[in-house]
View 1 (cartoon, rainbow, N blue to C red):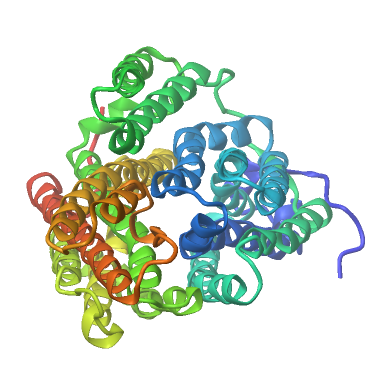
View 2 (tube, rainbow, N blue to C red):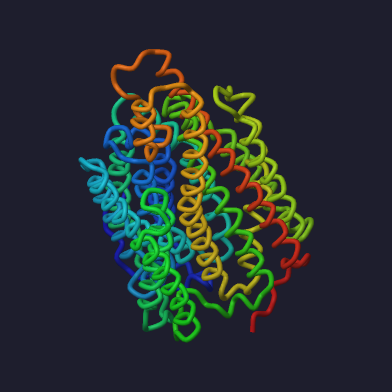
Length: 530
């Protein structure tokens, strides 16, 4: 039991040389590890639980499908664009301090999410949550790296990774149970005990650490340009299905977003302390791993965003059952993670980074076989298992390769860049796939209603709600035959869009395998990026 707050500094140089006299070398290490696990688990749980809670949120707040997208995208936008600058802030002003600030912001924003009475309030609270996560997520691993000398760091990170896998498995099931038996608000309230516990442990047991060689300036222009650029592009793709691509706000958002992203690249090239060091991309391994990450995690983040919606709104699963549907995926990654970690040593980086995405592509393709009324074991389980195995073969070699690509001195920055790329990939994919879903849904729904023989007024009433996608509400007072016809048309329209999304995801996974084959070397030594 801790009795005093640990306030002494954790000297980076001393830790690198294995000092045992610093606070980090004593009992504080275990509290650093506990705080990092609990803090990152809070973010991991939230990321998985919200997707399961989204149908209930959409129903209770009377939100359109595109407003429901913003519930996820507002969080992902600020997390992706501020992730790298969040790590830099910790290096400069203190990792413990920024980690605690991130946890506090995340916890308070979670309370605001639970208290939201309309979807606009929830979207705003989720954006603030994303800011907190941008400080919290990089801070958790930074605390471990600062507290544990090199000889102990691998085991500590392995422990952190193992517990993160457990929370990733438990989160959707627990969240689904809370949504089914209490309310979607509890998907956010579950973060509060974690936040309070982490803050207490951080205050009482985690020593401060900072990087004395951190740049004296922060890349604030880069962070602003990245945020504005991604926001503009995401806004255009999310809003285009309702406003149309010819709408002035959509066109201005897309043009402004592209211009801001171009400005971001120029800024990073000339900045003395860039959040994204472009020189790293001189390494073919670094470029290849990040292209692989961009395409594969676009497929994963975008495809799995729509899976719970399909399971709950079309297939009739409860939130708890939908949350449990991905347990085989997580179990495979957890059980085989140590085996996958040895693949680079046995075969070099290229082979697993080609084979893994190819297996994942087969998994995504298998999802296209699940139609309306598909059972779990025949319709979804095989695809989830194959996808899980493909990602298992990929993830550990990918992490190793991206860190080896630039050498040990820049490994932390390289890992942070790769993490940010994966977040940006999911952010953009959800927006783009939303437009694909809207296009396919509208086309199939219109054709089905035209052939249904329903009255013109009834067809018009249904088509007026097409922005709700599978959450579309049936007009009151219609006869059971008409209700069944509409329900079947809506389900078939959503499944059509889901199949398109999974087919595109399979192509993206295939593209990531081709990027690995073309760019990643077959050797283990780091490349020079000078």
